Image (tube, rainbow, N blue to C red; front, side, top):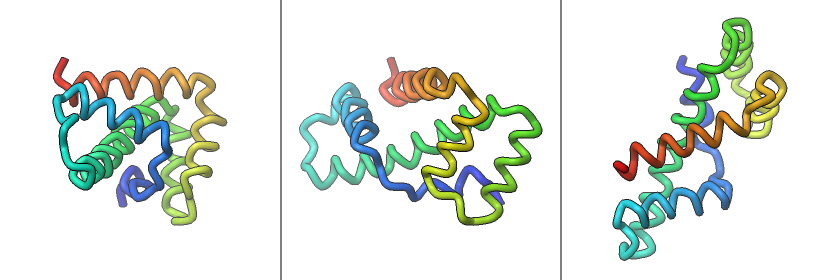
Length: 111
């Protein structure tokens, strides 16, 4: 089981939706019909979630990576549990998220 796939179906927070919409605008997709734009945001949210999880997971120690895998194997980890896990082990999590999101945007927009 790939523990990074288990949390991809989470609710999209408003600030993430706004961020993804800005990615679409910078990519030149600002005139899409609302339904199409929402579908693209939903798709990008899944990609961003995997991007953030991968970036964050890679910053964990080997011991914490094993602990995260065990947490995910239990099957009861919701978005808050995952967030709490990362915050308890990575004091600079906000910086990690910011850098990963900026890199995601750079790659997606192509600038």
